Amino acid sequence: MNILTQFAAETATADAGLFGALGIDWRLLILQIIAFLILVFLLGKFVYPWLMKQVDERAAAIEKAAEAATAAEKAAADTKEQVAELLDKAREEAAEIVETAQLESAELLSITEKKAKATAERIAADAKAQLDKDVAQAKAVLFDETLQLVALTTEKLVGAELTAKIDENHIRKTLKEQA
Amino acid sequence: MNYFAASELHISIAAEPLFYVNGFPITNAFVTGIVGTIITIVILGFVASKVKRGKYNRFVGLVQWVFEGLLKSIHDIIPDKKMARKITPLAVTIFFFVLFNYWLSILPGVDSIRIGEVPVIRSLTADLNFTLGLAIVTIVTVQVYAIRHLGVFGNGSRYFRNPLKDPIGAFEGILELIGEFSRGVALSLRLFGNAFAGEVLLIVIAFLTGYFAAVALPFFMAFELFIGFIQAYVFFVLTLIFTALAVAHHGPSDAHSPAVTRKVVTARK
Image 1 (cartoon, chains in turn yellow, green):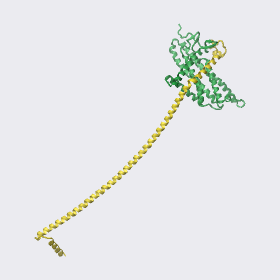
Image 2 (cartoon, rainbow over the protein chains, first blue to last red; image 1 turned 120 degrees about the horizontal axis):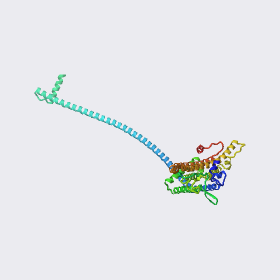
Image 3 (tube, helix red, strand yellow; image 1 turned 135 degrees about the vertical axis):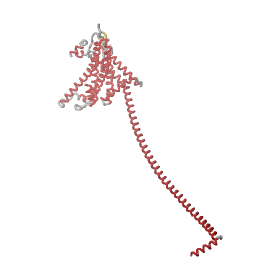
């Protein structure tokens, strides 16, 4: 206490008490309180509302942006999910198509193979039939030619022309001899 | 040969009158306080007008940024949004007004510009009239909010309890009452002490360093700028905490919210 009063000794001439020593003047104190309250009122009336409004608007904008971001994020997630679903579906369809194509190609191959086999068999059968026919025809021709050759040879041996009647007679004679 | 900027130290714990108007003392702190008030009004008015017109620059952005930070602190300490909005003008004005006035204490010529033997410039925060007045405004405001929130009897029951029914509570109420006064005194003396000590520090450094004060003082001035910010913020936060404690008081056994308790502990340190 003494230190305080010592420090303030020069100025505290009129007021000898502690408040006077500390320089507390009640008139000044009240005046400064009133001045400060007026300042608070003025700033609260004309300054802070604008600053607070701006802060509120910014906070609202941030909130709105956050909501929009959340919505966009959700939409992106939904889209991603949809894309994934579409991709899965497309993959499934592609797999089905590939499977069907494989089945169809296998079937087509099988049918083609059967057709080719049948055609080949038919061609072979036709060729065999033609061959048999040609062989038979050749045999007949050969038989005729052999007959003619035999007839000619016989004519030369017999020395007479063999007619069908003569030949028939010879045949019958031969058959009788044989019998 | 005198190597010192000032030939002798002039330290007065009280603000000194420069002149009298009808017997009313106009002190150096009062004059500097008027300048500080004008600066506060001009800066905040300028920022508000710019914000109103949607024209922003770095300075407006800086003040807006500080204002937003203060608002965030208010909402952190006082969860009730309505009450937070009501206390905002007082708390924010305390911050800016204390800040600007504290920073005026680093003006060159704090001790050297004189009328007669009295220095013309003295920070308003280094005048106990102002700091005590500010503390009274804060404590009264806190009481007003407490009465509005708890009612006259509810608020009174924080201090006055029946000693026959609840002797410990009655004792605690007396302590609470003493605490209210001590809070006010501590608020005013803390700010006054820091501001006054800051001015004395600058004067002493200027006195000791002589012509080298031009090199030495800027460091201390920067330090005082920082201290000014801290003191303004401390006063601001304590105003909010006292309000929060007053309106959140439910009884002797109830604990305060952890956020408020943490801030109180930090502020008291």
